[in-house]
Length: 246
Ligand code: PEP
Image (cartoon, rainbow, N blue to C red; front, side, top):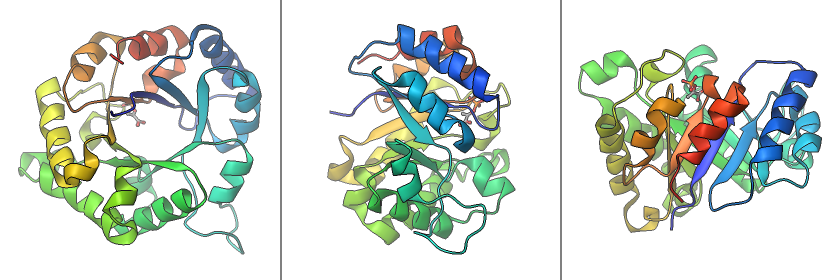
C-alpha cells in the first residue's frame, strides 16, 4: 500500500511567530489518519515548529540537506543535524534548488544518499521545464532524474523513499497540470520503478489548490501532494489535505 502524504513547503517565507501560528492552527485541526501531514519550514524555524506540532499527528521536514556528512562547509546543514532537530523527511532536488542553485542530477543523488543514510526519508522532486514538455521530453527528463538516484543508491532504496512529480512550469505559476497530464507521468514513474515501486508514494506538486486537489488526488498513481503557496494558509491547506482519499 502506498502511504498517502500531504506536504507543505513553506519555502523562504515567514517569521518565527507566523510559522508557529500556522503550525499551531494546523496541529489543532489535523488528526491522526492514514494520510500523513508534513511541514517543511525554513531551517531557522524548524525548532519552533517542532515545538508547535509536538504531540500532534504532523511530521517535520527540511527543504534541503548537504550531501556532506560534516566538515568545513560553511552555511550547509547535514542530514544528521536535521535528524537532531526532529526531522523525519527532507526535500531533495526541488526544482528551485536545481534551477537557481545549480544542483545537478548527480548532486541530488548524493543528497538523497546522505539523507537516507542518516535515517531521513527523502522526497525526491523531479519534473520537466515548459520547453522540455513542448519538445515531448517530459518522460525522458523525469526518468533520467530518477535514474541518476537509482544509479547512486539502488532501486530498492529509491522505492522506499517518496517521489514528487512537480512540472517546473506549474510551480508557483498558478498553472496546474491536468489530472490526465499528471497521471501520465506518475504512471511512467511507477513503470520505471517496476515491481519494487508498487508501494512507493508518488506525490504531485505544482499550484495545487483546494479547487483542483480532489481531481488530481483521484488519479490512480497519485498518492498525495507537495504544496507550496497554498500551504501557507491553514484553511486552504487543510482543505487540500482533506481531499486525499486514504
Ligand atoms: C513547491 O514548492 O513544491 C510547489 C509545488 O509550489 P506551488 O504549490 O506554490 O506551486
